[in-house]
Amino acid sequence: MSMISFQEIIDSIEKLSVDEQDYLFELIKKRRIEKRCLEIANNAQATLECFRQGTAKTGSIDDLIADLLDEQDNEDK
Image 1 (cartoon, helix red, strand yellow):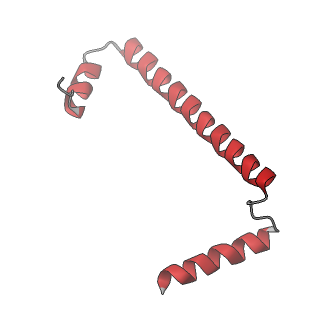
Image 2 (image 1 turned 90 degrees about the horizontal axis):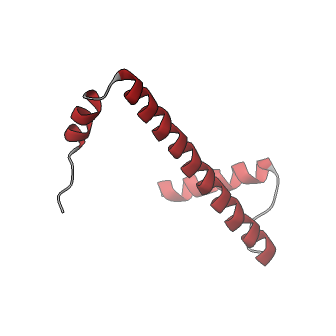
């Protein structure tokens, strides 16, 4: 099974009518949005599960910033 190169995809798209290209771009955009929504939902589900298990960190925004800065400092060492 051979893979289609990126350039071949571009060439194929350029052969489409303007209306077909517009439809394709909207379809791709919609699917990307749907995929991102699913990723967000999965992340939220994982976060809720961590919270239920007591393994999620809790705190204020200042606590979060301090944790992020501490992690950054540790990475720089």
